[in-house]
Amino acid sequence: MNAADTAFMLIATALVLFMTLPGLALFYGGLVRARNVLSVFMHCFAIACLMSVLWFVAGYSIAFGSPGGWWGGFGKAFLNGVTADSLTGTLPEVLFFAYQMTFAIITPALIVGAYVERIGFGFVLLFSALWMLVVYAPVAHWIWGGGMLADGGLFGETGVRDVAGGIVVHETAGLAALVIAVVLGPRRHRTTPPHQPGMVMIGAAMLWVGWFGFNSGSALAANGQAAMALTVTHLSAAAASLTWALWERIKFGRASLVGLVTGTIAGLASITPASGFVGPVEALVIGGLAGVLCQEAVNLVRNKLRIDDTLDVFAVHGVGGIFGTVMVAVFGAGTWAAQLGGLAVVGLWTVGLTFALVKLVALVTPLRVDDETEFNGLDLSVHGERAYELTS
Image (cartoon, rainbow, N blue to C red; front, side, top):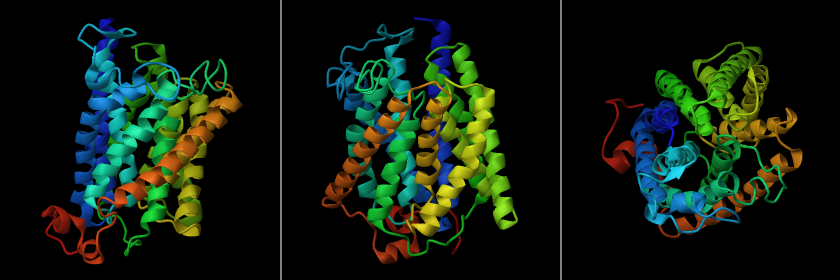
């Protein structure tokens, strides 16, 4: 065990959890109507709790049990055989377990943005539980757990390059969000503007800070790679924020706060798979392009395809993660076959199983709330609470 690496990863673990609670919760909460903000908080918090338990029960073992093949098995279910003295590299394995748990928390939580303001709470919990175990955990095994997409697997000695989740987190969450949005159908009031842009900015700022643990922590050591990952992460986020705002200004004659900080998230998602392989100049290129690309993806999904992915999960996270994964090959850090092949394999797996899970879970618990509940807001109707004494 290395004490410096362990101390660094303890901090990184806390930072990644901070991304979901409260970062993502505030970011998403500010974007919905005032009568639904507590339901968003409830979804994020409940998912964090449920995924933590399920990661301990089986998720960690599926992702990081025995190397090779499709999944890791159940050998490490309930942390079987893992003690305070067990090591993963230079880290206590129980710390590696906890760090990876925070990824298993935020990935299904990202999907929340696709279905807010009209989803059944029971559906959220059951779907998220099954999706993490049968979609996220196997994909994490394929790429990070020594599975079929890692080095020496399906694409030869140089496997898929994905530092912190361009494929494992952002592609899977983005595609799942798109599938649910299509099946669920649009909101009754889909043109309602964000109720609290200031809350959105605060949440985005927390995500930005937490993302340092996300990307630099994926080095699993306090070293130069971690330092470079932190630097390129910051630069990509900054560049994407500026180009998103500039593109808004060119197209609409004004730059919005919500747009600026959405650009931040686009830049962060896009640099995630490449953060251990590129330098500052490449990071500026990735972020600068992402600010425009993801904004155009929002327009495509929302206005041209008329899909109500409520908070643009696919356009920002999905497109950003896919774009960053491709840029790994563009800059020569990975092979085209592995990067594109990995995207295709994971994409097919995610779309197919997500659709099946949506249909299956809907047989057990209602997918969507009724019209009256949606009109009155989920806060009071479903959870018996309200965030504000407001009528909007």
